[in-house]
Image 1: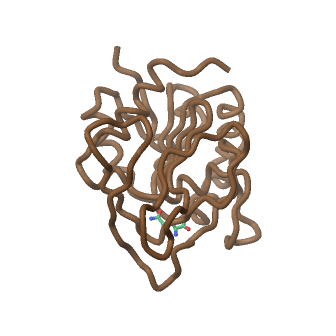
Image 2: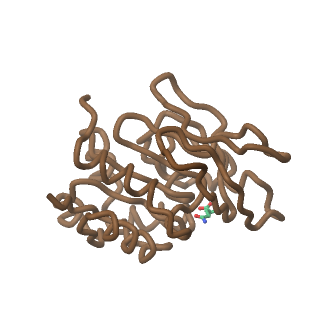
Length: 202
Ligand code: GLN
């Protein structure tokens, strides 16, 4: 069975996720309106600019429908800006930015410093075999606090940000600070597609 997985297509790197999802055996579709959201089995929130996507979620009338589907247990995966949107609390964002509370966590936006535009490193990722994941960080957030039900999947292995949480999961919702969609390594997307096929009980 090929699950239908939406990619929130308001702004950001939509195409890369589309490609990765199709490679993993899903049918990707764009989500820009409520009827499209209602038709998907799971949703990817791409990287981009979280404050812009937040604004567009309001403009397109998607904010409440999306919160509702997350409350009902829809599987979701957010990378970078998508992680920021899925948080319950965001530090260093605009006061009017909205969050979706898909994961009980506090995320700091642009946490690695504004000067640190992008960098790459290998991270060990809980639940993935065959070695570490190449993590590409682009003006990335990190996670400063996680609630009780949240599993930490990856941390920065070394350097000034050593130990910072950069991948998490709570129930059927996953988030990474980095961009697995740009490396050609499909393991993170495959993990998400599997959780869409067999969502955890709530
Ligand atoms: N810094 C961006 C934001 O605040 C996220 C960057 C990204 O998604 N690559 O939304």
